[in-house]
Amino acid sequence: MQQIAKPRGQFISFEGGEGGGKTTQIKLLAEKLTALGIDVVQTREPGGSEAAEQLRKLLLTGDVAAWSPISEALLFAAGRADHLDKLILPKLAQGTWVLCDRFLDSTRAYQGVAGNVPQELITVIEKYVVAQNLPNRTYILDLDPEIGLGRANARMAEIKASQAHMAEDRFENMQMQFHLDLRQCYLDIAANEPARCSLINAEQSVAEIHADIWADAQQLLNQLAEKA
Ligand code: TMP
Image (cartoon, rainbow, N blue to C red; front, side, top):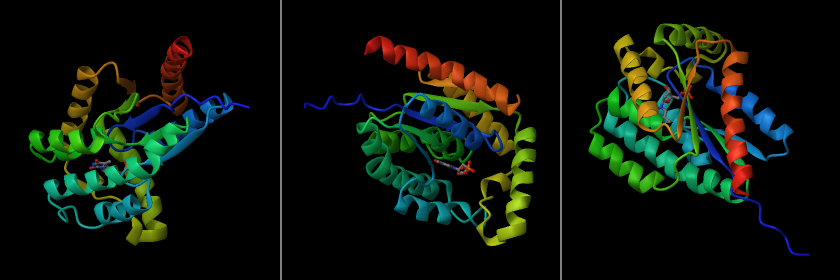
């Protein structure tokens, strides 16, 4: 019997500053999609493939000044290229939806705007590493950095109490102005790319944030059903 090829999966990224609850929201959306019979994989950046997870350790533990912003941009890009090759693109081709905790907008915001890496370099990296493989949808979880850092610090205190050397807190230790610049960059990305990006108020409860994301995801599902 002839097999009917499954349509390509959808690539969805979750973005925003610290403490917006991306991980929880990815899990909730994955549960909803799975209940509809959709294959889903949850992944993250930096990381997501074996080599990129090694880079994650180098990038996120230790001194804030361990890497210059340009070195960081290149290391995040190296991890992203491997993650795309080994996990994201093969899964999308199989018809699996990929839910990714951070992707290229994090480099734009953290290294580009907050770290002052020249825009030309960020653009060239995107052109060669990401090329046409932009997410179909990006949820930007927006909240006041004071609130986000408070949440992230509470979580970090728990991790440090159990495994101090593993704490991934380099960026959370940066000055408040860094976090304000990050937020502005994400707001600009959402305004400039409304077809891809949906800005979500992450100061709401977990259930309210999820309801906003699910309402948008249902629109995406309806659009796909109309095209099929
Ligand atoms: P998180 O997964 O807990 O948000 O931690 C990842 C950290 O890595 C976060 O502080 C943002 C940072 N990051 C960058 O600076 N650039 C990037 O391209 C990515 C993917 C993450």
